[in-house]
Length: 293
Image (tube, rainbow, N blue to C red; front, side, top):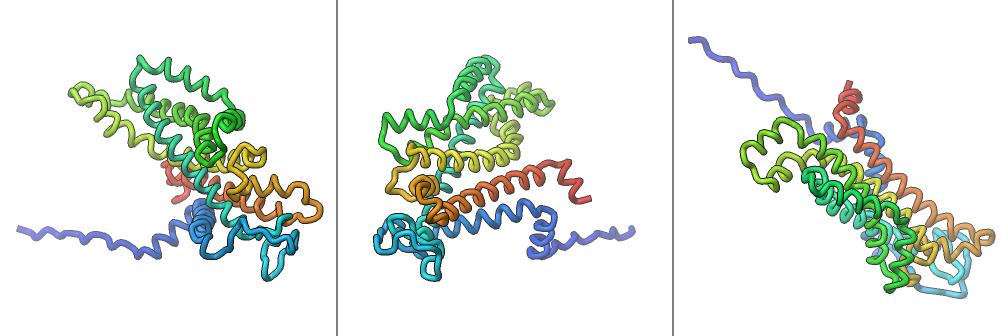
């Protein structure tokens, strides 16, 4: 009897080599993640690397950027650098919270609308009605009924985003529920919750991850717009929208008071959009094969 020759399993390349290949193949995703992680780290360690963002000093009003004050001061003598770094905390909290809540609620409602035919029409009409409500107008209405806070802002931005997630999940479910393995599970008597959990929900992960990045970027922009209009975070909480609104009368005299928070806002939104585009390219099998070719 001849001996069977068993081939040894291929040795995995070291982690650094795999990471290097991933970055070369996904430059957009890598750049976006690098900026996002840097901003997240700055937001987390803000209390340790900056002073009090609300501390005023009339003696140093509207001082230009210098070695002691890298971003200068505003009209109340507050450190623009400290306020910009602390403002990142508000923007990231709002962006990630809105994305998480919108995806969680939208996933449940979208699977119900796409799989349970009796609920489809009623749920989608409700979603159509919610999509007609602008986030800014809803936030202004909520703030008029309750005290302005970050929580109110998150709720006001999340509600209009839910229908978009519901429509995305519903479209995926409608296509997946007709596949053979789902029909086999139904014929085998598998309970509906298990079918949704095991066979349908995994197919929504990739598009939901991409959609979540776009929701986070949009939520950060809407929060800044609401704060600029006075319907967002209260003035005692530093945010980029508040900073721009409070400094708009000093643009000609002290442009740095708007330049730095505006640049931070644009950079974070750009980074999140780059991550979304990179994830879309990486998770799409056709694009992934084309990039590896």
